[in-house]
Length: 210
Ligand SMILES: Cc1cc2nc3c(=O)[nH]c(=O)nc-3n(C[C@H](O)[C@H](O)[C@H](O)COP(=O)(O)O)c2cc1C
Image (tube, rainbow, N blue to C red; front, side, top):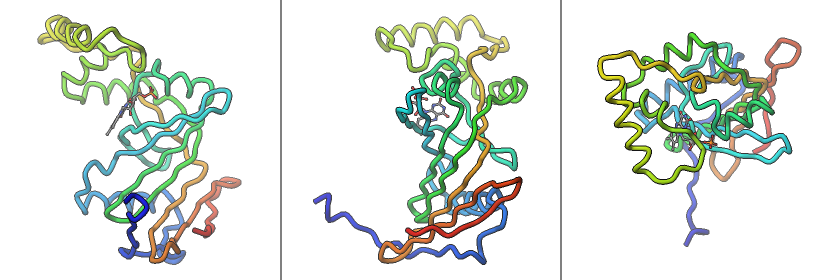
């Protein structure tokens, strides 16, 4: 029965002493641990956005980089998320690393990455992925799968031995964090939660009740 599914979390703890003063460094520690644990796609994250009326929306995207400036991912600027971010450039990112019993939540303001960064990443992708990005009008209704596959075939023929140009509507976003929360599962649902808020140019930390 679904109501009997229950895990107790005992893998680790997160103390104020152990948490880095800088949440990006703390994220790096946990991301490195997720890589070391060989988790399946540790860079998978839920991206939550909201439209102009406040109606929420969420989907999975892949984290493609992070540093002190923020967390970046790539997508189609004309997709549903792209339209929502244009009108309301705020987002929340959530990572869940089940095997490590960890969740990270990031709130922030969203900006487009500059064209050069998007170009660089676009051209680093496998050629077939570049073609798909051109062929797919992401989030729009299409007639059938066949028409999409035909378009891919045509584009593949057009760009044989040629550089595929990055479409203007495809590129990266960066989420510039204003708050980051680290959640470590603990026994009996008494989990550890450390939240960092960026206030007056400094990161403040607080422990939250589970
Ligand atoms: C594991 C996984 C990784 C994904 N990575 C991306 C990504 O990096 N960029 C992207 O645009 N969509 C990605 N998607 C697809 C999105 O979840 C979503 O279907 C798509 O972006 C359209 O969302 P939207 O209509 O809200 O704009 C991924 C889906 C999954 C399940």
